Structures are given as C-alpha cells and as structure tokens.
Image: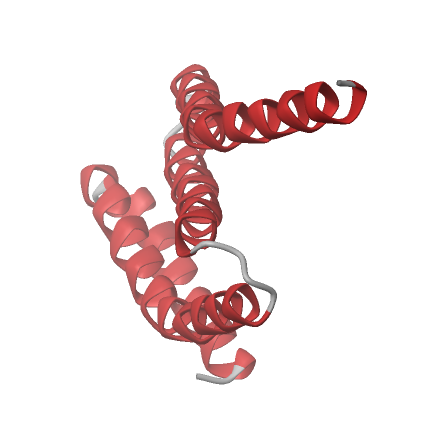
Amino acid sequence: MTTEKLLLIALIGTSVCLLLRAVRPEYAFFAAVATGCLLLMPILSEALGVTETIRALGERFGVSDAYAAVLLKMIAITYLTSFGASLCRDQGLSALAGKLEFGGRIAVVACALPSLVTLLETGVALLEGGFS
C-alpha cells in the first residue's frame, strides 16, 4: 500500500475520531483502534518482506534462526507497545501509557537476555581458551 493511501486512512480516521469525540466520546476510542488496525495491516504485510530479508541475511552469514527470531520478536514488541501507548495517550491515560512502555522495555530485555548470556559464555570460553 502506498504512503498516500496510508495518509488518507489516517486523515479519515482522525476526522471520524474527532467527530465522534464531540458527539459520542465513548465511541472515539473504538474508532481510533479501528483506524490503527487499518493502518497496521498493510504495514505488517510489508514487514513480512523485512523478516524474509533478515532470515536470508542470517542464512548467508551463518547466524542461527533463533537469533533472527529474537530480533523480530523484539521489533514486534516495540511496535505493538508503541501502538498501545499511543492509544492510551489519545484517551488521556498517559500514566497507563508509561507503564505499558516500561513493560515493553522489560519484555525486550527478557527477549535479549538468553542471547546475552550465550554471548557472555562464548566470550568467557574464548578468553579461557586463549590464556591456557
């Protein structure tokens, strides 16, 4: 989907949300969620191409698929967290948005931790083997 179409969806969705906020504020949130989902669907299809590129690079350079999967999971966590936090802020719930972002950061660290441990173990093994 082209950028122009995404912009059009965003403008229409924003207009609907603003109109609903004035007339029926309880529906504005659902309109924002629907607009966000409409924007995410074509973006996710583009993201599939990115995932294939990352996997192909991993194969080319001999990197395990597990590392590519972790990287993709971390990217997904950051985007979904950002999307959720934006929705919270749109509803005036900035404290909740901050907690969601903090949770997203913790989830990213939790994803990266096994890879970090493996990296440290490899480094220690190389250092021990090099000095013996």
